[in-house]
Image (cartoon, rainbow, N blue to C red; front, side, top):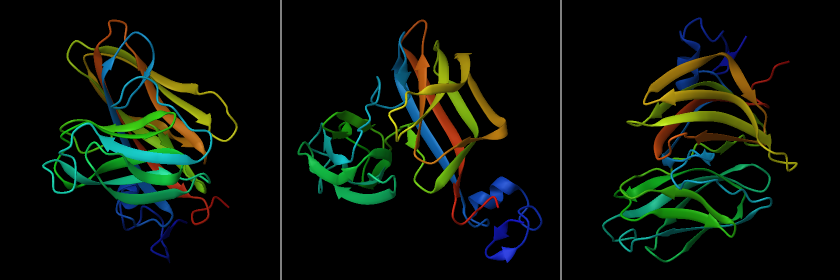
Length: 253
């Protein structure tokens, strides 16, 4: 039996479809998550699928995260983005959410206990006038591109106390684009390298698919999507869909 709103009902008796029950919060301890990213210029060596391009760096210990725009209009009272919301993991892999007012081309401190960027988006103002970059001393970890409102990162790290189950994905390539797209995972606690667990190859196409069995990813594991293009200059977008399980609330025993 799965507990729904503290009542002993199975997930499919009154609420119907299981995933709809999760999405509407009817099953205690299970939460939906969609992670989306786009790389508009994938070339002939592997790159992460994220707005900044290239390979994303990862800090090994908690550090300071800052945000800055390439345009002064992204500022309180300006014509662009004025405030963003940042979701990140701290040094213990716990989720933190902070709202940060921008200062245009002036750098603003977001956090001092930053370990992983999960998401960021414009909360107030307008779409970004410049490129809004979130970075630590090792490099940029997220970008809200000009004219956009979201960071567009496919990278995600499963928080402490949770298990993620990837249930499907949507992969799309732009006109005349080709790519091999890989799902890669690693344990973030022990310096392990990324391993590839699934791949799909496409040309100028879009595919939406479910996994026949939900693909589990344990707590404190990094997820990333990489791609490589034989012809280069390929536009690749990926969204993947997860169910997050709170391991204390929703137990297997």
